[in-house]
Amino acid sequence: MLSLFTTAKPFLGHSAVIQRNALRSWTCLHPDAEVILFGEDCGAAEISAELGLRHEPHVLRNDSGLKRLDDMFARAQSIARYDLLCYINCDIILLRDFCEALDFVRTAHKSFLMVGRRWDTPISDPLAFEHPGTEKQLRATVRASGILRGPDCIDYFAFPRGLYADIPPLVVGRIWWDHWLAWKAGHLGAAVVDATSRVLAVHQNHDYGYHPSGAVGVWQDEYARRNYQLAGGRWRLHTIADATHILNPHGEDRNLLRLWAPYWRLLRPKLVFLWFALLGVTRPLRRLLGLHRRPVLTPRELR
Image (cartoon, rainbow, N blue to C red; front, side, top):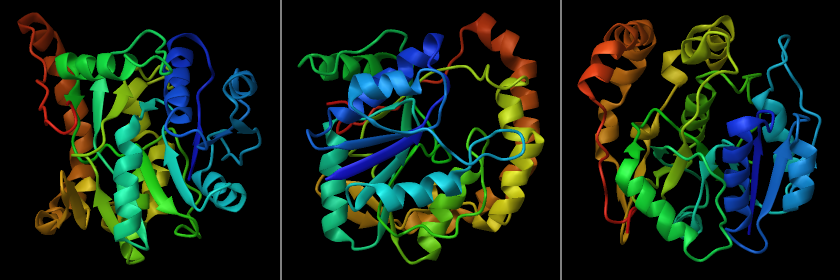
């Protein structure tokens, strides 16, 4: 079966609601699914006891207290009950289609990394995943108000034990660590599989109040820049667009379009500042006009 591992923000306010939703959805994937929660954040011990999670309070941190990815990956691969693992951000809801896609990928490939794009969705209330109608209702919510994000947003990483070793001291809570993980798997010769068409990964919308500068700080502060340097720069930062394979409703295809992906590594580090500046300047006008991104629906995900 599967061992999922994660770390969380303090379980306070809206963060408590969406993180509990995510954790509860994972425990419902399979009766034997293992969920490991790293960190001694406020409420972590209590939610672990409530949901039957494995709580590992100690995590190595950098000089500012940010949690280190290398420590969590090394320990998870050492202590996990199962040989199939998944690191996942603690605001992502998974449904049964995740396990179906993963079963296909693990059969097709000995060494692999399964990733997929997420659906940004406004969710503010607790969800009862043990209720048979919850999944149907959630899919309807995504259909009505969800937005499919681009290939640069990677929120789950499913892989066999032992794939990752010698991870740099990257920190979560800033960018670039996820893109390094995608690059590393491909660099090691593993199949990197885009499961977007088969997996409805629901990202519960939230703010970035944990950083004094909000989302801009998460992307641009000194620790984001340090992650970029530790990762090795733009040529060691991949997105889902770099996947070697893409799942389809009946199997998988080779990703021939990945040859176009390198443009992102060349341009994005230079455009991040301009992108946030443009968002800030145009936000009042966009709100006035009621402009927003429209969801792109696929039958497999929103059935």
